[in-house]
Image 1 (spheres, rainbow, N blue to C red):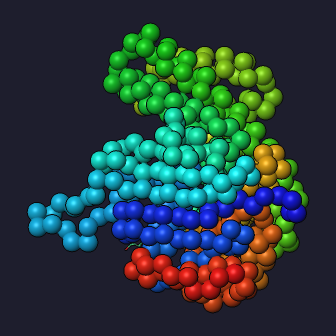
Image 2 (image 1 turned 90 degrees about the horizontal axis):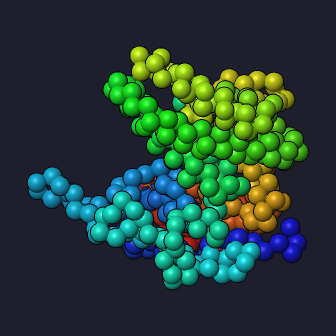
Length: 389
Ligand SMILES: Nc1ncnc2c1ncn2[C@@H]1O[C@H](COP(=O)(O)OP(=O)(O)OP(=O)(O)O)[C@@H](O)[C@H]1O
Ligand SMILES: [Mg+2]
């Protein structure tokens, strides 16, 4: 780690964000872990969400921007919430390329969030990814392997974004084209030219999305094969899906031709209520290697340890291949982890050249980090420094 410039936030400022009218958090520039503790509803996850908005996307809650603006405490008599015209999150960030000021937020309740980098409006939100990257785990992901594949694809797509800055745009273009294609067919509107145009768009974007996902699965797999610690299981990861499987053995142009052909041949069946397999139905499969068991059959703690193994491998991949380590946001990190695993995780994280933000309801959970982390106490959305590192 010597010689590697750490990445982290030196100062974070929130205005009209969730439960915070206004708050400033000043952090030690040596970027030890940041521990936020407080009772339920104190405002811990809101801080992590604010940090996540300093990267492209909809943040760690996948929220609608309008829900993020601070709501007045009292609902006015006619039952309509009073929303402030704007909310913002800004930060001073130490990156491998120097100190950068970033800010984001909305103006006049708009559904588009504005981004400023070093005081200048950024052309696109994805420019944030050049300054700061974040990975996170939230309690909602604790059962990721047992739930809907949509959540697993979203988890994987976040890992992909760091290696392919165009991934999110391609994915949203694919989804938009598929939605239109699906609507046309289900409404019985067989407009051939329109359908062909949409199929072309689905093929171009869909095959590229599948290829980027496969590429990241293979990159992360390389780092997963070197275990961090025996307490963190080795995860074997793969992608299932027709397009993805085809890309493993055939050239992308051939897979595009096949997908195009399949789309045209599926029109009638789909219009009659059939389904269509594509990148929108792919699944991210994880196996606990030591136990040779599908992650969905592992215990809750084992599933969390598998997720952490994948996140730690992705961090190493980003650091080795891109020279930049993402910030890590771990909400309710202690949930489901026994104390040995928790403390081992803390030791691993202290060794990473990045800032790790963790929340919990009790300070005692983080006792192993005393003297090595900054502890903040949050009460009713008031933040106070308890113990500096
Ligand atoms: N847009 C909003 N405006 C005002 N308050 C909000 C808004 N969105 C969420 N809140 C409130 O912010 C408070 C703090 O939420 P947060 O999720 O940060 O709590 P927490 O400290 O993480 O609690 P827990 O330990 O239960 O996870 C909650 O009472 C929540 O209802
Ligand atoms: Mg919370």
